[in-house]
Length: 277
Image 1: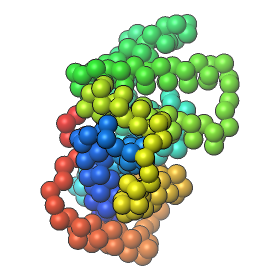
Image 2 (image 1 turned 45 degrees about the vertical axis):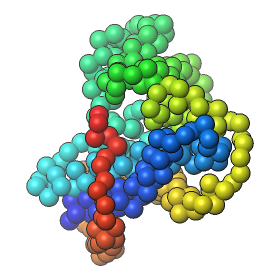
Image 3 (image 1 turned 135 degrees about the vertical axis):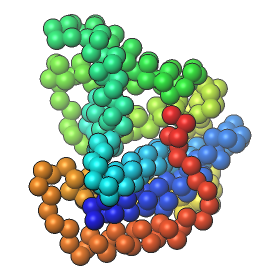
Image 4 (image 1 turned 120 degrees about the vertical axis):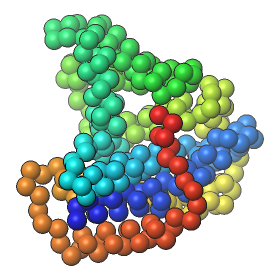
């Protein structure tokens, strides 16, 4: 039953939330960015920010749900990354398995207990450089990796010096900056990434793109609420607990509703954003 519930949650993430946002953001990034309004650019960037999360975490939920049906417990790969209070915390929550792999295969071979801060910064930058190249042999992936490495190194330094930032401020800044950094990842090349940044901060044009895409705006609003407020899918299914509580009638109704609604909306072919990685 936990497998069915987890699969249903994952299917709803992918079909109901991720797919419409992917459709809009893909058209934006593939189109003539220089002719777009600032509002269209913000909508595309925010849409991809939530689309990537629900696309990938939905895929993981479905895979883990199917695993439970056959008695296999696949590892947790997402733990509410948009609730992270700093950039190091973000990467401990996002794509956990690959982060652990890079930590053991790269970082720990460059940095050891007792090493000083310059060595920590160097090891962090190299680790994220490798991560960028792993995602794709292109400059925008490499620069994305280095920028992420700098942000994580900064977070680690603040932690070492015991500089604490209020949780709400930390979460807000981390999410906003990671959303901007994601442009480097989502763009086809550095030229397009620079164009997107220019559009984001010139604040030119009208609100017409938002008014013409109120459905996408609504999905983004719902996605934000889901990311920042309620329990995540691991907590809903109680998978992390050593002694899971019995599932009740509400869980069954919730799973059935999500699964039926997801299947009813499977009207077109859809691939996963992370399929290429």
